Length: 95
Image (cartoon, rainbow, N blue to C red; front, side, top):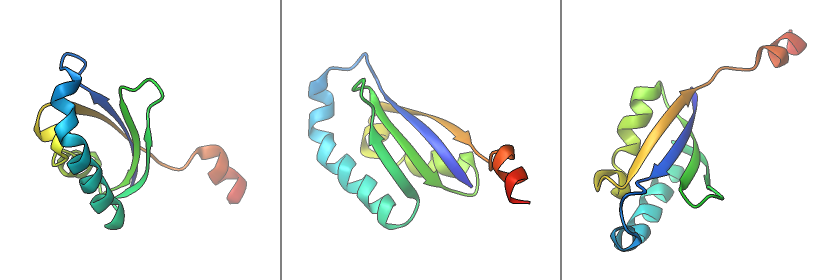
């Protein structure tokens, strides 16, 4: 299942807490990309996190994998996940 993820930085924490974890965060995200779990990842233009498209069996699996990101482990990043299905207009046009 394709799952859309809105990752949001903890706005109550100072930038100094994020800085030492940014390289490990990028390394772990790249690992998840190479595994095929992360399909797309984008920085949010508001600077408050990222938008991620992942492939998982369900939202619970997605949240479990994402919880291992260094920023998430440190309580600096939270996630909202949205499972998806094909848009019915597309399905109708294909059948």
